[in-house]
Every structure is written in structure tokens, then in C-alpha cells.
Length: 173
Image 1 (cartoon, one colour):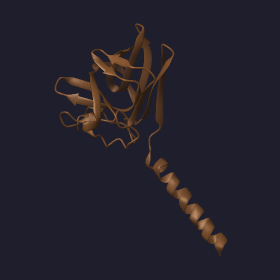
Image 2 (tube, one colour; image 1 turned 60 degrees about the vertical axis):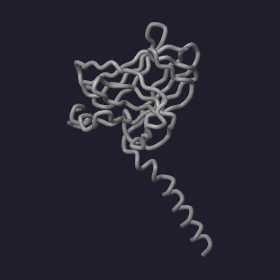
Image 3 (tube, helix red, strand yellow; image 1 turned 135 degrees about the horizontal axis):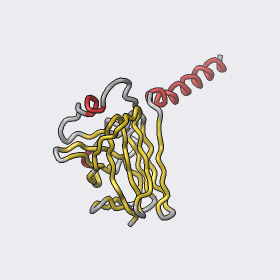
Image 4 (tube, one colour; image 1 turned 45 degrees about the vertical axis):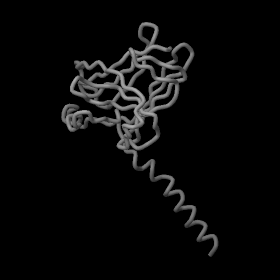
């Protein structure tokens, strides 16, 4: 009898441990860059268009609304060095990363909380926001793709989805 109860408890615990994984239905992606020997990385969900358009999906954002820049769990940004995105300084650390669509364009938002579900944005925890350059791609990208690359002695953050390309250059401080 005791073995049966233990087996039921173990099976129940295994099921509870698997629930957060089952809730994430989209693959995860990572982007990495070494900047002056210091790591910069982004970890994010990769939803697919599946016949939809980016305009239809992101057009649902209210003015000033934020998007988790992926799917499921919030996008996580980590840097081992202080960075500057133009006039905006982001201290080394780990943040959740969001895109806010304002009347004057997109902003990259660094939030002091990280690890939360992607619909749990607390604006009071926003550390900084930097302008994103928006361009249209000539070819559609099916899944959200974030990349970190080298650019003029610094780095380049880029998010592509559908025909949308959002990017921002940054430097190590």
C-alpha cells in the first residue's frame, strides 16, 4: 500500500513539474554576442505567422502597449557589461525585454523583472527605453528571429518577423 501511495505522489509531482513546459507551445531561441570579451545574450519565444500577418498580430496593440518580443515566457536580455543604446545607458545585468509601440515608432524597453510570463509586464519596473529603427524586409520571416551581431566596434540588436525589422545599435561602456 505504501509503495502505491509513493508511486502516486511521485507521478503527481512529475506531472506538476511538466506543466510549465507544456504551457510553452513555441520553440525557444537564443542570440549571443561577445563584446570586448563580455557576453551579451537574448533568450526568447519564436511564434510563427502561420498564414497571418505581422500587421494583423501587432496591430492589436493599444497605443503605448508592449509586446514581449516573442511568445510564452518574457524575453530575457543579459549583459556582462554596461551598454549604451545611443544616449540610453543599460547597466550590466539581466532584464526582461519588451517592444513598445508609441506614436513616434517602436522603443526597446528594458525591465528590471525577468523570468515572468510574457503578459506580466510591470511598467513601474521599466529601467530604460531606446528607440528602434523600423524597416521593411523584402522577404517574409516566418518565426520571430532575434539576432545580435557586430557593428562598428559595438553591437547590433535585430528582431525580424514577417516583413518587420526592428534594430538598434549599442556600444560597451
